Length: 72
Image: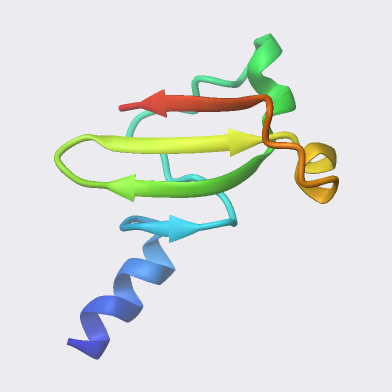
């Protein structure tokens, strides 16, 4: 079990809090105005993946009024 958990944390897949998202195909933020959402709040990995992202400065100020939800 520990090996499985370690492999998930190293691969970036699975449920996560903070860090960087592990998109399956491509990063939908690239080349768009969505690039400002540079910090992962959490990633929920079920049948679909849910990513909640925030701007780093907003997180530092604990301002959660503007977050991005991506569903893959």
